[in-house]
Amino acid sequence: MRLKLVAVAVAALAPVVAMLVYNEIALRHQRNEEVRASAAQAARQASSEVDRIVEGLRALLVSVSAMPSVRHLDVRGCNEALKSVAENIPNIRTIFVVGLDGRPVCGSMAFPDGVTFSDRDYFQQVLKTKSFAVGSYTQSRLVDRPVLPLAMPLTEGDAVKAVIVSGIRVDWLQNRITERGVAPGNEVTIADDKGIVVARVPLPERFVGTVISDEYQRLVHAEQPDVVEIIGQDGTARILGYRPIALPSSPLYVSAGFSKPEIFAPINRATLMNTLAIFGGALFAFLAAIFIGNRFILAPISRIADVMEKWRGGQTTARTGMKGPDELDVVGATLDRLLDELDERRRQSQEAEEERSLLVRELAHRVKNGFTLVQAIARQTFSRSDPERYNSFAERLAALAGTYDLILSREGSASPVSEIVSAALRAHVASQTERIRLDGPEVVLPADIALPLSLVVHELATNATKYGSLGSEYGTVTIEWKHDDGRVLLVWTEAGGPPVSTPTKRGFGSVLIERAFPSKAQARSRSDYRPGGLVFEVIFLIGEPVAKGEVDPLGKDDMHTSGT
Image 1 (cartoon, helix red, strand yellow):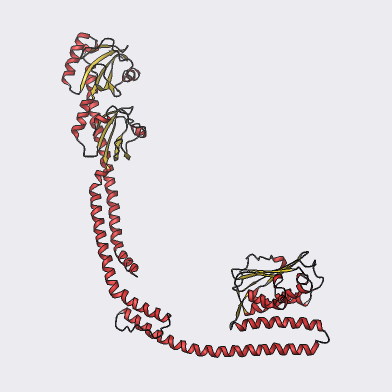
Image 2 (cartoon, one colour):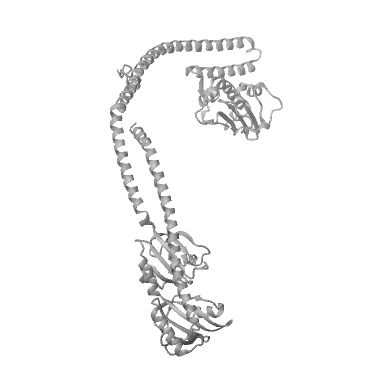
């Protein structure tokens, strides 16, 4: 009962908990969507800033390509012009012109001996496409610092006669990203077309110059920008908005990630507080339910239950003595009235039982007298003229009387199969019990089934004594039965007797076996006259009739319907 009271308290709290859980889920979903939108927006802003930087340097290279000294490849004038340009633009390290053979022609600084750029990917791309190109993260051969190369063809008509090269300082780009600032746990990453990180916040010293893991290389070359949830290389779960290189205006991969632990920290704190509040309220509700339940519910119920246990134990005078307007007091008073009425009915039942026992004993006496009278009439009528038939009749009558004795001795209308079979065999097994084996579960049969079964067993035993295994010195009989779903299957198996064969005519015993059971039993029987002995099977109902279409264990072709 205490558990039920607690269940009531739980049921009262369930709507509140369900509402809080729903609000929690809705709030987290809403926050997740907001963060996804913010991640996509942050990636767009970072990508736009990178695009402006690249576009500004592209414009610079276009302007440089228009300088006369550069166009005419005047080495001295070109060196002075490019040096002046490089000194006034802080985000580039150098700017120079490379011939078609990859060797530098002029530039903003002196070139090391033998330096060449013909193997650089940006140089080859410009010669191939004749257009502006952004290279990969590169260690500069001029200043030994990492740069992001930019290249522009210097054309004369449709022909390329040289390539103008510059490079964004990676440290300058890193400073620009760092100045933007990111919240704790968030990150911004810029990478080239090979997935090499050019700039990153936070932990640039750990990631700049490294390659994005193979798991996320697909984002660098994706067809469209998107937002995904990932576990970053630093082990932080993030909602990541990214802009792939495939976009026409994006020469670099840019991503902006928001840390999920940081984003959901306020919600997690609110969830913790709400959870503690729920547990506190639930604990108070449970304690209140237990205290109030003990005082006003459990104590009266225990009093009622105690009276019922005493009544079961034989203290028929036990009463609750409860009175009052309370519902449980009303139940106790009603129980007292019920016990008074049961006490009176028990007294009346005892009187009726005594009368019934007297009637049963009188009925048993009269039935026995009736069997004795029938046997006497039969003896006087044809015992001398036909002793064999008289003896057979007397034995059948004795078997029937034995079953009646069994039923009446139990003062009921039913008897177990084992006792019915034993009573029917009593006249045949008195001196040879070791030759008959009974095996089956405890199954109780009603009187209208027990009586015909006893006659069938008696006839089988009589035939076995005259013609079968019981007439032989070493013959045996096994009687087995099974009970399943209201049906009983009984199998009589003879062994060790003389060879048997199918009889040429049907005697009274065969007819009796076929017609003994009432029609409601739906009895089916089969006799198999094997060389080693008779095997007889009979199946009958002791419960509800079998529905049409159910399988009969004996098979339709071998059945004999009782009453036919």
